[in-house]
Picture (cartoon, rainbow, N blue to C red):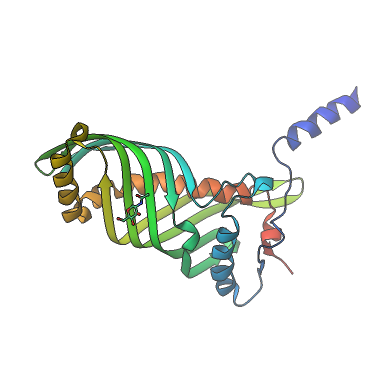
Length: 248
Ligand SMILES: *[C@@H]1O[C@H](CO)[C@@H](O)[C@H](O)[C@H]1NC(C)=O
């Protein structure tokens, strides 16, 4: 009797919590390395490139493109009042990302980094309806939102989680800020396919892309930060912290 109880407890604790290791070819950095930040600045983008096709053993999805299921945006007041639904989203260009700064504070489970992505394309099926400045806009088709020289400020707030005597660095909160140098927008099939109106609207959107993007930025940031958080935790929840950031 006592044995079977013990067995059940062991089984429950083990559910979905198998310890894993980083792929062999990932570069590891040492916690005590005086140049830890320099090391991570190079190792992280290298790992992202190596995850191009995903890492099945860690359930990490393909990074090129990275699929996002859906984003729904309701922009309320102001000059841009718009409801947008995006589905089947593909992000292209993440694997060309470099990091310009890295600040790891492992004692406080905090990672801060700035990235630069030369060209990030957001391609998705969209439905939208609303108003931009004084112009009504509506459509259903394919959206291409391309950000050039996109700087992203990442702030990962983690916490230690202990399991089977191992410490994992779970990311509890993942904040991002998007600062693109330029945003190019293209929506196919606006106004039920009226080509003249659609072309005019796409020109108008690009002439006002700073305004349009600023109104929508926070929704993009919130959606993408949860995608980045998921991918990070796919690794951080399975690989013990001292096997990502080596102790010796
Ligand atoms: C999206 O737009 C960018 C910039 O205009 C362009 O370079 C790229 O080819 C487009 N991508 C697709 C899939 O249409």
